[in-house]
Image (tube, rainbow, N blue to C red):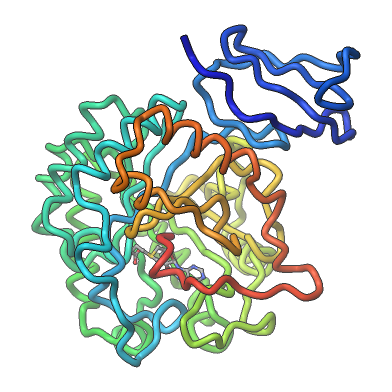
Length: 374
Ligand code: SAM
């Protein structure tokens, strides 16, 4: 018999009300007050799913397997040495395995492996194989591509189905300035290797920063057309270690759309509500696709279905959460699976309504992107 979950508050028909989960009946009964006899709504859902108090179902989990990275991208990390967590502070593969089983039982269907740079941690292929065996429906990875070409086949054998590769410039010297590495050719080779594998079509991610690489919008679009990749433009978010972010450095997705559309007309492709990117194909039938990810100028929090697990075992319900929730201590203090389920559900219920970047008094989280997992 399942134990009842914690009380939840939900917004129903615009009204915030108190609700109580009754898991055996697989429904939530909403009342004006916890002890009220007056029922004002009923929501049927699978007992073992994750919902927040705004009625959003959580189906996507990003798992950061390391906080280490072999690049130092200027919009993410500092040039100064940062202190990585000690190895024993990072979840072991068996801890990550146990948490994955629990999250899958809670209705997570989409898992993205990220970091830091996921390919710098030995054993990532074996972990992907375990996730695949556990039945993850949609298994993907985000990488900077430095170590990908030689690992591509092993990752596919392990069960990886989709990949996102970061590429912030098509100009080798600018690439070097942004990433603080000389890996331009290596990354291009990785994109080619992935494109000629079962991982195609590859998603290529560029974070645009005004004055740094925003002159390359059209070149990136041409790159998409020539290589048949899905070129995705991500708005710069206030998650950089140097705290240089300001609104003037953000290149709005609408501007990117207008510039590409003026040169090669675009047609919108329907997308799932919870997808982060607005997707476009080229009207002239050229291969490739454009994706626009606009967390700053067109936030998509209302349909957010994501949570994140950091490499050191903290659960985060939003990229911009002020707090994170310590699963590592629970794991290491002997919590049972039921304890973990109860805790995870109680954390997810309180997922933030939105990220508040555009609200007065917004302050970025203390963790920067490399320590969260993008
Ligand atoms: N190392 C891998 C990579 O480079 O793709 C995975 C981790 S990286 C943190 C994940 C994604 O976050 C990348 O696409 C990266 O460009 C993006 N990212 C990092 N800092 C960002 C920021 N301040 N704003 C927007 N995106 C950012």
